Amino acid sequence: MCHEVIAYKMMEAAEAAKHLGYVCESISPKEFCDYMMGETYTCDKTMLNDVLGSGLLMLHEVIEISELKKRGVQINNMTLTSCDKAVVYEAHLTATEYEIKYVLSRGDLTWIRLRLSHAREWLKDENLPENLVERLRSIVSWLSGLTASVDDV
Image (cartoon, rainbow, N blue to C red; front, side, top):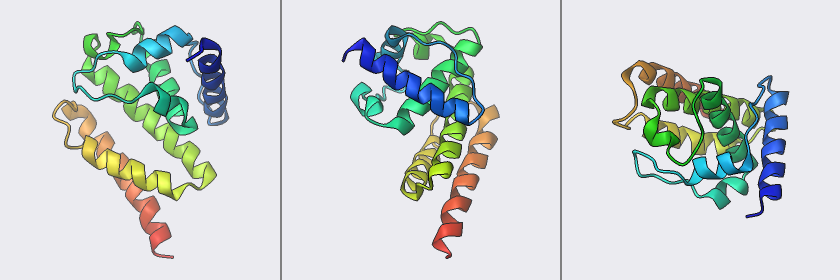
């Protein structure tokens, strides 16, 4: 995919983050692609085209990468395997929290339900650092509450 398209989509995501009060770090299209296509210790892959096709996933990934950069992490295709897992998970959870705030502003209950399902799966992740379990449980509770309040109507 053309770097200009990626740069434009990253700029859109950074603007959405800014509306939430989050200031993104500068991320090059190369860093973004390397990060998205790099190695993971869980062997899971989110496809670059899937992310580029979803404003919500773009928002999530741009904030996640920004969080890593704010902690001094070099962004490349080995970031996820060479960086402290706790730092990666913290960045992921922060990105998830902002993503949810953005989704709430749009009223997208379908996405909230999808992320609730994902967050419940993340709780089963054996790589999740123990000190982040409670934070993730809080996210699950938040999402559960959002879906329950609508389902009760």
